[in-house]
Image (cartoon, rainbow, N blue to C red; front, top):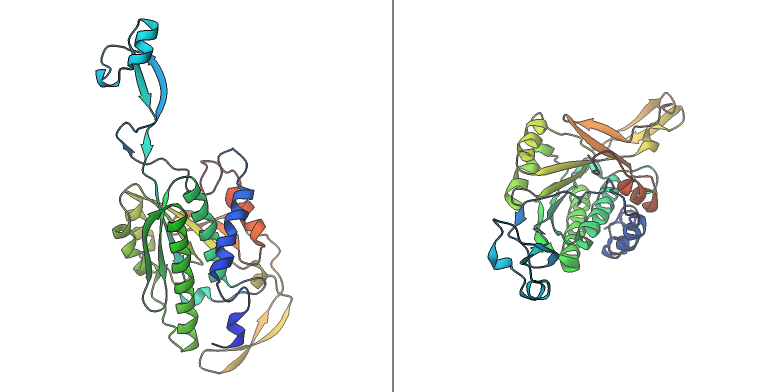
Length: 301
């Protein structure tokens, strides 16, 4: 590997993604509903095991839930109410196809996508959810089965680092074939059960003509949310002619008319669905605050 591929912002390191747990926990201290994924309601399983409340018996209550102690103490029938258990699953989908491996300022878009997903993963794991990974690369995808707690998140981080390295290696050896994004998402429905949340971090280049239909199909029984990773600095370069080298080795000059005057919106529409826009050039702390910023509906999308 060349030294240029080992600098921060280009190479993805596990220790950096692990350290993001502290960053996102600090940003998510507000008790209000936030834009960060993981706060959705899924199917309920049974009556749970944790007692949430006690109330007097009414006709139709399950007598198996009678509380003997409260009934004996008050002389009136009382039943226990239990906290409902929620099986929460979040599948993180990282786009590490060739078009994600570039950046103008702080980091490659691929690194920014991994950082955003890692912060989301830490958040949902801390909330008691289980997390898994589907990482799309120029070769074979990297899949990490769904698992809970910090151990599950560490497995996901290992998968992110492995997949990102595979993407860098593929580019270094000219294996830069880029399959449509919609093709990579065909596995998503088979990796997690209905009711799960899917967080897709991508630049949404080479989406494929059927991406909208693919997302609609996923949305019937799951909850897809989109993170659009951009690099605003690329559209803010000063006016001039810039030398560039193409993949085949040819050198060309590109003329730019000057920086764009309009700031990019917080949310853009991708394949008919809203996507939260994140700038790869922003600091980690800024990205964390954008992820937890309250929005209508309490979700990223």
